[in-house]
Image (cartoon, rainbow, N blue to C red):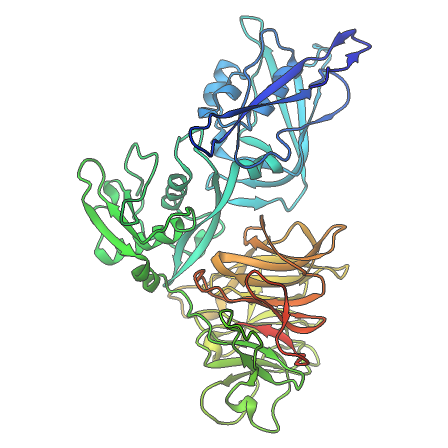
Length: 627
């Protein structure tokens, strides 16, 4: 490590700080490797960023260094900011930078503030103390993670500002008396320390993914491993955003058995979860729903195979409450059926279907017109379409985008009358429709005189205009209802012409006769990193596949969590894609290929391969899966 430069004005060498990181050993008794980091920490001058583990690999463990004797206020502030990123139990090193009272009251697990880059800090000198024992810490806020572990993208002002007051204790050592209320981390530190997981709750008879973040390793406060942290979060209930439309099968007050810090699998690939006395007297159907929530929540957290979850009584009893296998849980979870066909509109403006067999060497699809009235000559000219999850009905928008029809895909018959959707203008300008698993049909009218979101109950009832809180008069360019019927993705046109992606919560007035009260609430950004989104679709495990462009970047297709946080997985060769659709199924064992509309017509992405055209010269547009 190079020597630090001399400060010409002060005539002394700047203080060098070190932070030790241990790397996990992977082979035969390998010892932990200690890595030393070096950073210059000035105690005066302009605002400067604190580089906290930028680019550190996720397997690296970071441990802070306690304050040195007679450390300056600048060194105390920098040491504390570094120590907040450490993995030591109870964040004990970070607490050593605080006064005794502040160390006892500080609750770093209460919330996390995520900044887009490192922290800046500068002394805030006052008249009575020219040395500036009060320091201002600033940054650009990207998101927060609340006490329910839910990620909340920043939607308003992004400036973060916090004041750290320093005082001298009886030993004349500087310490911080006013720490932040929770953790403050750069985006890179957050990604190193935390990982996204899904916990699952029921909306009606269907499981809904509720994304949250837990520590990638043992939590410093609770000392729980990641699986146990996730189960604890599941038992604590859904996130605030999703809570109005889902419910948990666990009785209020259900927790892990006291002292549970880790959960493990037995020789039969069964996860045994000990619960407290609140869960003892539930009936078997409810207990199996509880176990189903746990199985779906935990099965993606480990590379080990999980065949069964068993709930057991607390304490020394350890007797079984109930258990579910992966097969029986699938029946309880209410998952949509695996689609049989993929659909698109061909060059003759017909709705056609095909099967993309990823296991076959012959990967050329053979599209065929859908059965029913849409295939009857002279045929109906289709602009866009959606197919119900049971693949027995199609909702099609006419070529001029003025009319919506719901057509049977089984049996014969003639074309029905159009649905009375849209009002106020000369003619509707309808988006592609979308079905949810309950059978409701959704479509938006882009008519400038009367834009809005419409719902057709059961796909056959009287269309109803749906109130969308927070839309503020903007038009919906496209939409996609989630299969669970609890959420809807809306691509919204901005005044400048770009499109922003939001996810809204679908609230239904259960037990009330006034079904028109169905509404969409609390729109939240689903791709805040992108300045323009061109297409989107729901993907497995509650994710979204988003096609768009970041500021200054090229077009790309990325999987993202519905809470607006980025997921690393991206698709190759996204330039040229215009419209994307993916299978509305949670079955990861039999994944469906991504189908897209591109400059080359309809293309699809076989696993581990590059994009392929559906059929040479087939052309077409508007590819969809059921939903």
